[in-house]
Structure formats: C-alpha cells, structure tokens
Amino acid sequence: MANSSESSTRAASLESFLAKIYVDENARKDFLGDPFGEAIRAGLSARDARALEQIDRTGLELAAASFARKKQKRDCRQRHK
Amino acid sequence: MTATDDRFGIGWRPELALGILANLDRIDVVEVVADDFFGATKSERGSLATLAAQVPITLHGVSLGMASANSVDRVRLDKMSRLVNELSPIFWSEHLAFVRGGGLEIGHLAAPPRTADTVYGTLANLERARIATGSAPLVENIATLIDPPASDMDEAAWVSQVIGGSGSDLLLDLHNLYANSVNFGFDAVDYIDRLPAERIRAIHIAGGRWIGRPGEKRLLDDHLHRVPELVYDLLDCVSARAPHPLTVVLERDGDYPSIDVLLSELDRAREALESGRQKRSGAAHG
Image (cartoon, rainbow over all chains, first blue to last red; front, side, top):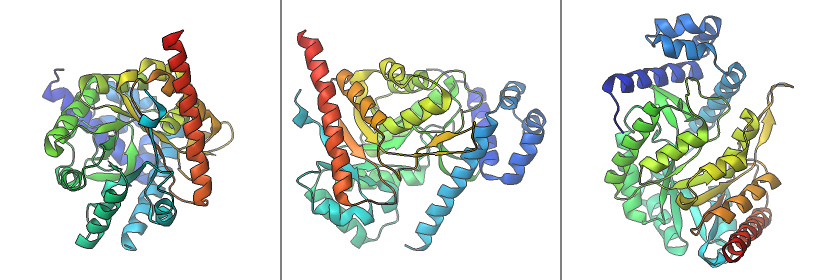
C-alpha cells in the first residue's frame, strides 16, 4: 500500500490535534467555540478542519472525561508501586 | 475442531492472583498486561516467569500506539520484545489505537481517524513490531466513546484492511464491539460477518455501564461489571464462523467479585462458544 510522506504528515498532525483536545480542557473549549478556525490555526488542512466542524461533541466530552479518569488512575497506581 | 482446542482464561490482576492460582484446573490461560512489567524488578520478572511456568500466558500491550501515523514507541517496543523473548507467551497482542500525539500522552486508547493513511501507518507499525519481537502481534479492536472525526470508512472496513494487509490476526473484543455498535448505531453481527473469520484467533469479554446525560447516553467499556448476555450471544455468533481454535479471556479491572463469579462467567463463555461450534459443525454436515 503506497502512501506519500505528505499524507502521513497530515495524518500525524491530525492525531496531534486530537490528542490536544482530548487532554487539554482549555484547548477543547477553544476548539468547541470555533472548530474550523482552531483547526486551521493549528495548521490542519481545510479538509480536516471541515471534518472537525462535524465532530461528535457528546463523544468528545465523554471521551475526554474517560481519558482523564484513566490517566489519573494509572498515575495513582504508579505512585503506589 | 473440538472444543478442547479452545482456551478460556482471565486477565492477571494482583487482586485476582490467589483465586486464579487456586483454580488452574478451570483456567487454561492467563493474560498479563505487559506494560505492568516494563519497569519490573528482577524479582518481579522472576515471579512472572514462575507464573508462565505454571499456566500458559499471553502478553497484552496497552501503550505502544500501534494505530498511528507516527512510529510506534521504540523504547516500549524494545521492552515488549524483551518480555516476549523471556516468557514465550502463546501470543502477544496490542490495541488498534493511538495513545499519544504532539508530545502529549492521552492516558488511554484513542480510536484513530479511519482513513487509508492510518491503515498505512498501522501496517508500518505492525511490521516494526513483528521485526522487533520476532512474532506478529494479535491486534484488538477498541471501544471508543467518540466517533473518530475525519474518518472515511467504517470500523469493520478499517479493521479488515489492517488485518488483510498485515500478518497480524485479530483479537476480537466483543464488549468493545457491542459498546461501539450501541453507541454508534451499527449491527454487531453484520460487523462480524464482514471480518475475515479465519483471522480471528482470540476473544475478549467484559462488562461496562451506561454514562452521560439522558438522551445522550453511551456504553462505557469499564471492565467493572458482569459480562452482558448479548456479549455471549456475539461469542456464539463468532464461534459459529471462526474455523480456528479461540483463546477467550475475561477482563476484569476492579470491583472484583469472588473468583467463583468470574469462573461462572468463564463457564458461560464455554457454553456460548460450544453452542456456536455446534452450529458450525451442523452447517458443515448439513
């Protein structure tokens, strides 16, 4: 399966953006206020920015809360090892 | 194919250790979370080797970040490789998830956008993992509370492309599948029908709970509750289609009931799998 370095870089940028809005509450708030604008300012393509305008908002909030709980639980377990 | 070719086991957790070790006549395999032993002392690794000498084990990874456009974490991969070589598990496995990006650790398993780019990145990472460890990992479908944005294919198509393009077989987590099907409105049986049945080698079963506001509820795969009956129905369905022996592992991560309760869940899994096998056998001879 062929893939260009340009499309790999674009996919990696999208993952980085998703990681940020999953873990950073302020970034998530800014994003939800202006999804397209925040995505473009982060350097994402117009295509990905348009896709992010349609993001599953309920899922985003629930997933972010779940990730935070998991991270807290894991950090706590590591501290007590 | 006989039912005795299939294996049934439980995820290894310190809280369950005594119960597991006291019931090895009813437990065929133990799944160990590899990441818990990446920083283990020599003594802890010795204990793990002792466990592996008593019961077949599988190693399960949670932090490599296999389904990513970024390269899999090399340091963690080397640690996984060391464990695989030390313990000779039946197989090792990782999730089809990304877990970090832009220098940030997400803290858990995130579903990648389902695109050709992430299929490509995942295949490259699976090849790196195969070379590093000497064996292709099984890959597990994950539960997600968010429909991954910027996707241009559905989950069954994405997973099938990864399996089809790699040497990795599938660890099909039936509660993850069930949760995603109810959260995003697709038919779990249709999903199973679209997978390459001959590539399904292992199964996870677990329970979860509903979260969220009324009208926006989603099923969370938290491994803290009993396995719902619908998951056993899916196990029946898979075993009616999968031609190879299956390793079925019950995952439980807290609110631990007595070991007898967990063993009864394994017995229920045996019944469901046997029911599916009989349907497969009946179809073959009918």
